[in-house]
Amino acid sequence: MSKFVFITGGVVSSLGKGLTSASIGLLLRSRGLSVEMLKMDPYLNVDPGTMNPFQHGEVYVTDDGAETDLDLGHYERFVGRDMHQKNNITSGAVYLSVIQKERHGDFDGATVQVVPHITNAIKQSWLKLEHPDIDVIMIELGGTVGDIEGLPFLEAMRQFQLERPQEDVAFIHMTLIPYLRASGEVKTKPTQHSVQKLREIGIQPDILVCRTTQEILEEHRRKIALFCNVRPENVIEEQDVEFSIYQVPVMLMHERMDEILTKRLGMALPPIDLTRWNDMLEKVRNPQGTVKIAVVGKYISLTDSYKSIYEALTHAGIASHVKVDFLRVESEEIEEHGAEAVLQGVQGILVPGGFGNRGIEGKIAAIRYAREKKIPFLGICLGLQCAVVEFARNVCGMSDAMSMEWMEPGEEDLDKAVIALMDSQQNVVERGGTMRLGAYACWLHEGTKAREAYGVEMIRERHRHRYEVNPRFVETLRRGGLVISGNNPDSELVEIVELPDAVHPWFVATQAHPEFRSRPVEAHPLFRDFVAAACRLPMDTNP
Image 1 (cartoon, helix red, strand yellow):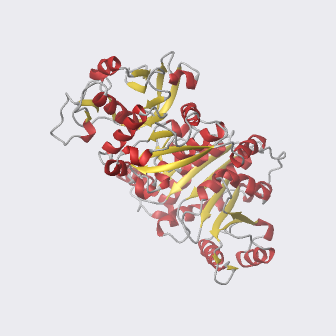
Image 2 (cartoon, one colour):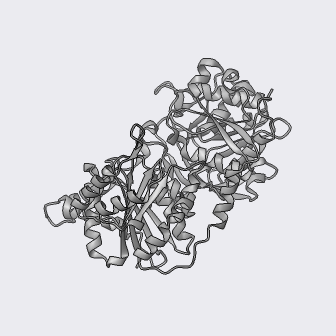
Image 3 (tube, rainbow, N blue to C red):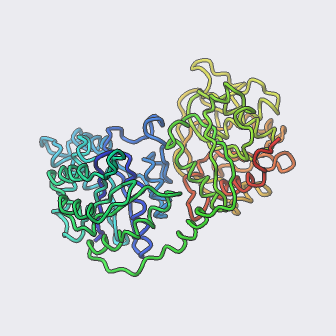
């Protein structure tokens, strides 16, 4: 039977439970265990797919097309295991499933209640992950203890610990230890109150992870242990990291987190091996240079909106032994001040995904600047669509080229739509269309930068978009000099475009979201080669 570890949080939100959960997962995996992960989000949205990036951050897409919480990105990057739909549940999804069963008559006329029907549905989502090959299932609850939305999940945890053998269930609670600068003191009272609230529900944490900016002294550990009813050695300090989030697993290892947790679960394991992880950290700690990359997006003000983009660029920097210096640019800023004024001196330009027409002209201007100044460029999803529009306008002479997405409803002009809604037979449709979600195959043409980067003929990448390159204009784009370097083998839709070496040193755009497949110990090929090309362009000297 699999072991279950529940991670909850208290005092404040955004403590980094996702990073901590992923780090613990890495420690357990590095001791030879097979680890599965689950994120529970208490909000009533069925999934984050329709949520504003300014509120929720990026939507992380899995191979099976699930639109999930960004913490699944942390899980994949740290634990090295692909996540799926079953690895993320929300209150909305749970309530929807129960109500649908009630409408179908599955409860035989019973009064449907939070207990037991909602809590049973929650527990069933956990049990779906259980498998003879899975040693530990780590389950993280979003939000903080005391949030009304999270109470059914906590009640399900309380029930579950009584239904399983004692050594099969462990609880980790993460809290904040604030530091009062005026008095020079750390305060443990918020942690005491948070644990007290958890114990009122019927859950006694086995391990406390204390986020702090200051060292927790032995006297503080003893005080926390006494008032929270845990052993002093089970009070784990997690200070703000010095230079990288990838330090967190090593920090927790030094606090003996893996030893304490596996002992609590009754598991005797071989010593931990973090050799490859430590080698990666050494490159992060001692970069051999810096490269300046501009990310020109629509949701720049919230860093989490492009979390996987920044992480993939960081991984690519590690591969080139350099530190990536991010220039985060709102595309509307380029519309106001011009690309030259905003982007002067950058060594690479990346245009990520997004929806809607706000800031589009700024993205297009940034791409034109990258193309004409021969600055390495990588376009992601909407970045490819903007690159195609820019090329059609400024190279192919189609001055009014557009995407259907940016046209007013009822005023679509298909003679301008180089980017359009397509059906599976490559026919343009005026409205509707189905979003391409999840992993799709792509055939890479020989002699292209994309083929050189991946090193194989056929790849699979994750998608999240509705609009495609209109096949009607592909030959026009080719005659203008745009290289179609990747196509879907089933629909022949354009997946990757680029410029030839004779025209540009490195200019590639993809319909997919390759950032979701990048790992700190193995950078994604496109990001790796993009940053490597940027390193070859001297800083502050681009034309």
